[in-house]
Length: 77
Length: 405
Image (cartoon, rainbow over all chains, first blue to last red; front, side, top):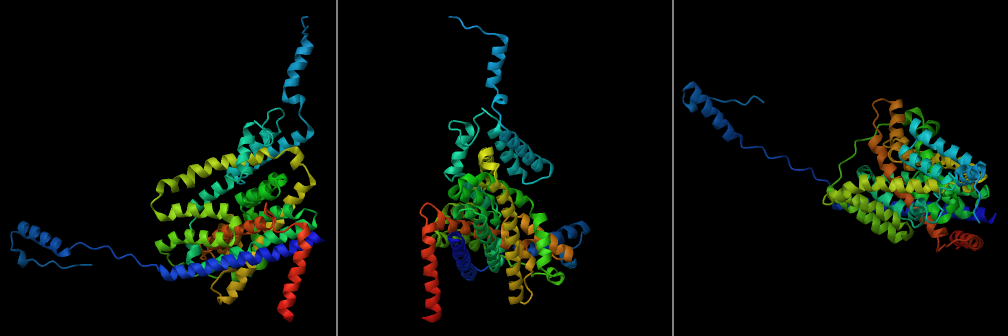
């Protein structure tokens, strides 16, 4: 009977300690979240499209034997 | 004077040197049990990584004259067993578990920590029932931890509190862990309604790298300041996780989650198997432990589910109670069971990552539960049978002082 009473006390103590420890961890995670918020990584830099367009324009102009300023390149996306 | 050797005396001498001359009925039964464990592991897929070496260790230990029992000083498995006795293998397994574990789902939804805590009720209810069945407090504590569904913790604690029960406790813990997909669903369906099982949870938010790195460090400091007895398990678990998250210890992380954990699993499982002798295993206590282990798993599952239902009410339907059953540890099997039962109710319900939160919280919860048991019953025990009455008296006085001033 004494062991039974002791087991009930152990249950009470054990569950209380577990909830207290994990409760403190919960509060800690909330603080960590506030201190270290997730930040979306910056979008990867796109290359300078102007330079590429100029190269394409020059290549087409050379092929067509026309002046580059007479060729219009329009983005289709 | 020259000794005469006859054919019959030569044969009898040779026979006396074989195991056949010394084998007992108990050893034959234990060999059959060992073969049964190996069969279950290979044919039925019951935790094969553990039950194959445990079964083989038991087979070696019960073949007479082979000196492979855990207690056979000088034998090979005697030295393997020293890693259990001196508490080296279970914490090293925890190092590997930490390296394998992603605490991201827990960090994204820290409320699930409480589900891991609630599931530990199975540990303590089983402790009470074990005491009622005649086990000592120390033995009952070691049996109760089966409900934590965490093999290394069960071995660690039973070695400390009840080494004579190590074999049956380890076998029960690992057998029931492999039976989680069979044990849990009926309890889950009994406690939750169809409508509750259909609840869809919001997608988990991303977690910053800094938070992932800080988590194992902070958990170690806080938990071990509060509960130093849990240091070997929590300390190694969190070190393994730091290897994983810090990004600068790739080799250590790789070793921890593969080669180290595999090597230690072999040593630990063989050592546990070698402790399964007829004298320690073929007892009524073993039968009781097997039954109590099943009860512990069921009670732990119910505890997690009931708190899951409470959280569902508090959050106004944002938590699916099914993820509560994953609080029993058994990573990641229990989380998969939550996913399976949830998707049976609604095929578009994806609970796996949500259930991983309570699942890994259960690992921490079980280690804390073991720490509490060690603090109460370990070498520097706070509670012995003689102290129990005094503690009860103090408890009653404390409650009185709160109620009546």
